Length: 145
Length: 229
Ligand SMILES: Nc1ncnc2c1ncn2[C@@H]1O[C@H](COP(=O)(O)OP(=O)(O)O)[C@@H](O)[C@H]1O
Ligand SMILES: [Mg+2]
Image (cartoon, rainbow over all chains, first blue to last red; front, top):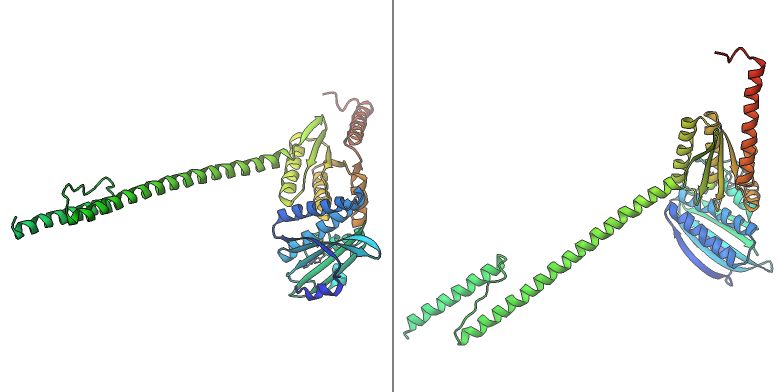
């Protein structure tokens, strides 16, 4: 998926903390641990650490399951006057045809429970998703400290 | 010395050089010209001998290197085998089902639940339920750092399968942070008996056990003849 879309919401003054490739199932676990590490560094409490780690776990698994992997960008920035951890998942997979449907509880085209996307949204402070069929999907989540 | 005689001697020496080179080419690295005559040709002869020396050294070195590489490779392969074995052992280890009382199984789940591990864990538990006839199984997830929808789904499936085999599962070790997260994800665990600690789960299981024993005793009192044989 083109990064042009990303530019729409990306602000120049964000500090990039890392960029990782997610390819294997093992990467889901590794990258999840990386996010937990940043959440800790951010001095988030255990509940917020768990929330953001679980949210990215959903996004990582989706990338692995439906798009054959993708890229994860970790940033920090000031959002609405609060310091935020910003995680962006970019893939060049099949894309999502009906975003509204995909964001609804219990909808799954696979063997999942269909709570990944809507659940992740409830776990974070801000959730953005864009997708184009045959191009890919970008999901960005933000969690304030 | 006549010119023909001289030519003959030269021919012999050239033949010898050719023979030596042929021997070297065939792999005999001990072959040398070793000429004892001092003349114009002897310089070339000596140079060829030196070249053969160099070649021999180089071949020996290469052989040594190849051997080293092979040794290292086999060592790495050995290590790989051990790692794979250890991973498999770990998979087994990380789902050690044990029977704590007559009727109760405990499965402490440790680490990350990827699809492979969950599969093995579930199979182990179900096998053990059939094997022991236990009717209560405690799944302790204290050691699981992240419960996302996939893990929850696997847990729910395990509970349902166990139920089909006649065993009730209790899930213990859900931390407050994980409990909140599960609720936000939107997953409904209300059909599953949960306890916050393994200890709570064990006490619950024990009480359950005593109750079913009592029911057994009760039926014995109610129908004394039925069990007389
Ligand atoms: N990165 C992605 N690429 C393509 N399709 C996706 C992606 N993420 C989610 N989807 C689609 O959205 C649906 C809902 O996702 P989710 O809420 O995580 O539920 P589940 O993964 O359990 O199916 C998926 O079944 C899939 O069809
Ligand atoms: Mg999902």
